[in-house]
Amino acid sequence: MITISTNKGLVKISTWEDVLHRAHFTSNLNPEQHQLDTILGKYVFQDKVRCGLSNCHTLHGRGYLVTTKTGRETNIGKDCGKNYFGLEFEEAAKRFESDFAAHENRELLWSFSFRTDDLETRIEAMRQGVGGADWVHKNAQALLDPAKLPVQITRQVGSLAKQKTNTFTVQREATEKEIEVLEQTSSRRLDRPVYVDGYSATIRGLEALYPEYNLRDLIIVEIIDKLKGFKQLSIDELTNQQLTVWKKWAVAVDLHLDRANESVAFGRELLTKHNLSPLLTVPGVQPNEYEKFELYLAQLP
Image (cartoon, rainbow, N blue to C red; front, top):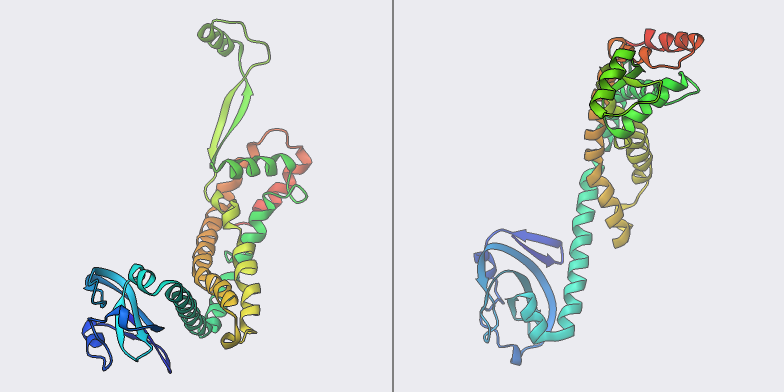
């Protein structure tokens, strides 16, 4: 692919033959007889092309189209440009690459701007109703909040999420017979009481509680809030640095949206009576607090 700068902006052409047939192009330019004027374009090819300098002609896949003070055009690689035209070429290449990146970023942002209404519609639909993102976030975060649910349960859930495991085990006091077996195995006397693994259960969908799947961060912070700022921008007046920042955000929006959809799916799997009922076995919960958790379960599907 070849990208050429014109008075109408950057133009892309697809074949090297189009370059060779340009009116002022030569594939055999003597660098000792010409001075660099500007960098006209850049190219990247899988099949290599010859350097246009008469004393080089090295095959390369990446390079620049340049113009000279006399109006002639040729193609050169980065190393040739640096060797034969020195600092002047390096500065021209930096300017061209900066302008090229700014143009590409501006085009991407303009294209993205036509998607904003559809994006807002999709997000609004994702958030609504039982099983929607708002419902999932509210009920999933409650599992980590000791002000809303028994502290022993929220600690257990928080521990599972932190360890990124969905299986928890409730320990119980070992019987004397079990202790005897353990002492024989370890060849030493064990201090009483001794605890062994008792009841174990699997809680599916705990990924919804992982930090990287936090729906508020993914939807509100990373998309909705920044989208409000984006819609107020004048894209054509952004600096190169601003273009880079907003381009990085725009490219990441679909990744955030995909992850939000994954989080909602995990949340729907997590937030069911059947899936969370094993947490009723968590030890240390006071009888009056079990009622709080049972009420929480009752409003789940």
